[in-house]
Image (cartoon, rainbow, N blue to C red; front, top):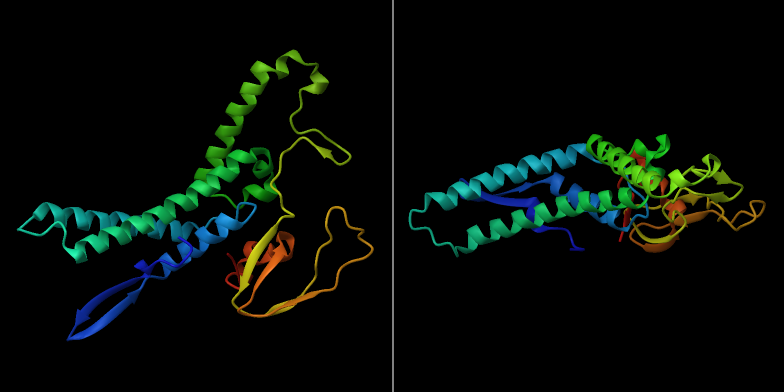
Length: 234
């Protein structure tokens, strides 16, 4: 599933000429899914695309069910009908997996995404899931372990110097980034073990190339809506 789905095109005929309807939401969903799949953290939720695709899937699914129920001697193995069913299932898979990946990240690092700076990227349903998930997990810890510890040792978000009890995603990992247009120069942020006094040289990246980069270098291109579409994770 690493190539764009063909379902973004729907063909029809009018006055003897072929007309092609390009569904941009399907293409956007594929990009959202692919970026979410390879990003080390949760990216901003695209509510419009998720809602539009959900409505489209429901509408097309009902149409296929009605077509199947009418019968009229229709061949269940008709290639046109089968291909439309396959396309529908492919889009449903993209939407489900996009949401599944996001929920997996939330369940792995719940405290991290409950912080105000990170919870803003979640949908309303994801925020509710995250709060309920962490309340249940925190209650389990309190009843099974924390209740028997001294009050000073019962915290789950204590921080001392560089030691932090809050589990966080690996935001300094490397990712493969493909550029749709040239960008740069980009300031390279220092690593956690690098001397801040010696900053690396700025990078200039060329369109059409794929680079292996640290996530902080391209992170802003996925969090800032004004820079959307310039970089794609692969």
